[in-house]
Every structure is written in C-alpha cells, then in structure tokens.
Image (cartoon, rainbow, N blue to C red):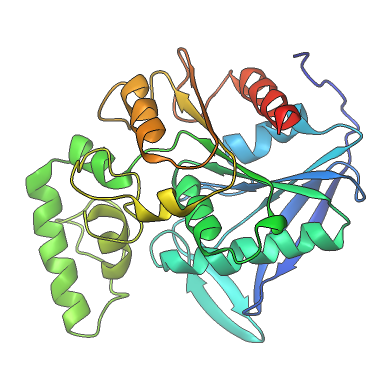
Length: 294
C-alpha cells in the first residue's frame, strides 16, 4: 500500500454530545459525506494526538472513506469534561469503564448523521476492551459493520508481568478498602501504585474478576463472555514485539481464535511495538483488505 502524502487532506474539529449529554471533542479526517467511516477509540491515557489516532488516518482516508478520532472519557490522566452545563472530571485516573458505551454511541451517532453507510470501530490497546464491550451491548448490529482490534492485550496480565503479583495484590487491597468506605474516586497512595489512578479504576483495570478483564488468556478458567457475545466480524492485529505483552503475540492470537465466536481474522505484524510506530502502512493495508472482503 502506498503511503498517503497528501498534505492538504481535510481535517475538521468535531464536537460529540453523547446520549447522556457528555461533550467530547474529536477530529474528522476526510470528506464530511462518505460511505465508510472508521471510528478510532484510543487507549489508556492517550488522546486524538497520540500516535495511532494521529498517524493511522492518513493511510485509511480516500474518496469513500473517512476517519473519526475522538477523545473518550479516558483521555489523559485527569481531564475535565462537561455533562450538560455541569463540569465533570474523568481521564484515565477517574473514568468509569462502562461509560465507554455512551462515549462510543455518541461517536457512532455523529458518523450516522454525516451519512455513513458502513461504520467500523478501531480500538487500540485499552480501546480494544471498550470496542468489544460496546459491541456486546449494542442492540442494533446494523449500527456497526465490524471491529478492528489493534494490540488487544489484557491490562491485568500486562501489569502482572510488569509490576508483579504482590504489588498488584497490595494495591487492590487498598482500593477495595477505599470503595467500602465510599471513596471509590480517591487516588491510590503513590507508595502503593506509581500511576495516578483512583480506587474503582484500579479494580476495573487490574483485578481478574472485573468486567474490563475480558481478554482472559492469563486466566484459563475465566470465560470471556463479552468477547464471545460479539457477532460482528473482527480483525485482530497484534504487535510482534509488544512491550506490554506477557507472552508471544502468536499465543495471544491463538487464544482469540479459540475464544471468539464471530468471524475473526488475526494478524501478527513482525517487529511492531505496541504503538505500531513505523508500521502504520502495514496496518492500514491489512484493514482495507479485510474491509473489502466483508
């Protein structure tokens, strides 16, 4: 696939008002009226200006295809939003995972109002869990035609690999105590966890029994119900040298193949890191080729 070198590619600022009246900001790449639209759901602490949401659209946009990248409630670490006329705080430190359904639904509604006939979700990193969870709750399959998962890995298994079982256990104990005291949005002490994160968000990301822990390859006995409930076609693209993975990419890809009931295609991009830096052309080519086969 040839690199898109069009320096005059259209890009518009988009405001998304979700069904629950939360205001989100985004960027629309390409024509305002087009048949196919990819919606990019960024990962933990990321934003529309992170590498995947920023670099990938240039290789996907054409006369029939646009891309909507937007800041979901998990962008940055602590971020301000508006819900109606009231201010609210979220960001990766404070967001509630299940709110991703409202965020994505708002983006899908914008794409539909722009006249899109075919809508595809592109989740990257933790955006993969959000894409799958949204699809598992989606009542009308016609709203989204397919899902692309870029570097879909378990945050729980990643931190078990990077931080160790003992550190996670100590932080989880403190987080549960805060939740019991009604302090679910209080940040964990820095001596327990190196990142800014509140109690409920920690438990959602880094405990084995949470709704968010749906890529359960580190837990052979846990059934990945949200993933198995998705019937939409899925393209799962894995980074060959993902720095956050606790096992080889091919093993994670094989787990997806065993545990996905949908029409699934998997691909491992050799020598790619978690952000697919320098591999955007390969990723875009695989996405376009998959889309044409649906």
